[in-house]
Image (cartoon, rainbow, N blue to C red; front, side, top):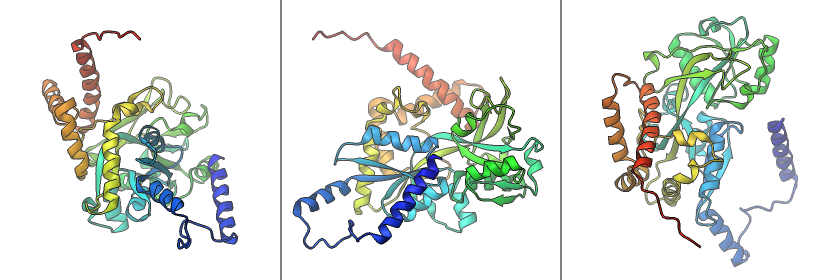
Length: 385
C-alpha cells in the first residue's frame, strides 16, 4: 500500500509537470538573482546521491542512516534514493545523473557480463566497504519441497534489476535448474503464489525481511533450503533463515540453509580531475571519520557487523577508502593492524578457513577484542561541572 501511494504521488506529479508552466532548475538563468545562483551552487556542490534500493530493504535503511550521521549542511549532504535493487543500482551508478554511490552485491559483475554483455566494470566501479550479507529467500508453495522441484516451474524473481533477479538467476543457473522466469513486483508475486500460478518467489535481502517476518503461521508457504557448495565459493557465503527471524515460516528452533551474498558499497571510479571525484572523496572520508556514530543504539544493528578490513573477490577498493583505512590503521587499529590481529586470531583457530567461517570468526574476534580493550582501559576520572 505504501509503495502504491508513492507511485500514485509520482504519477500525479508527472502529470502535473506535463501541463504546468515550465519552471525548473534548467530554466533560463540570464536574469537569475545572484543570491539564488549562489544558493543553487551551494546546494549542489557537496550533495552526494546514494542509490539504496527498494524501500523496505536493509540497504535503504543503511542509506538513510548514512544521511542522518553524515549530513553537514552545505559541507556534505547525503541524498538516499529509492531504486529497484542491486542490478538497477549499478545501472544508476553508471548512467543516472546525480548518483555517486550505490549499494549493490558482490556477484553483480558476473550478472552484467553474462546477462547484459557489459564488460570492464572492474575498472569503472570500485568498492568502499563490504557490508553484511543479504540472504537468498525462496518462498514456495507447500507441494514444492526442494529447489529441484522448481525445474520447469514458474518462479517470480521480482522486477528486473532487483537483487533477486540477479542472484536468483545466477544460483539456479549454477545448480542447473531451468525455470520459467517471471519478473513481477513482489505484491503481485505473493498473490500469484497464493493462487497457485507461481511455484515460488525469490527475494534477496538482509534478514529478517519485514514482509516475510510478519507472515503468520499456517499460510502453506515455506522457505526452500539452498545448500552451500563449492559452486558458490567465489562470490557467496553460507547463511541460514531461522525461526527467530521468521517465526511464521520456520518451525520453532529450526533453521533453513541458504546462500548469502555480500553487500558492497560501490562508487564510480572518476578521474581525480573530475569534480564528482571530490564529492565521493569527501563522502568516503566523512563516512570513516563518523563510523562510530553508526554503531550506537537506534541505528541498524548490522552496522556493528561490518568488517572494514574485508575484501571483495573480483573487486578493487576505491583509492580514497584504502588511504583512509591505512591512516586509521596506524592510529586506531582499524585497517592493517586490525587485519593483522585478525589473521593472528585465525591462525590460533583450528580449521574453519572458508570465507563463511572467516566471517563468523570475525564477529567472535571483534567481541573478544572489545573485551580485551575494556580490560586494558583504565577508569577515567569524572570531571565536575
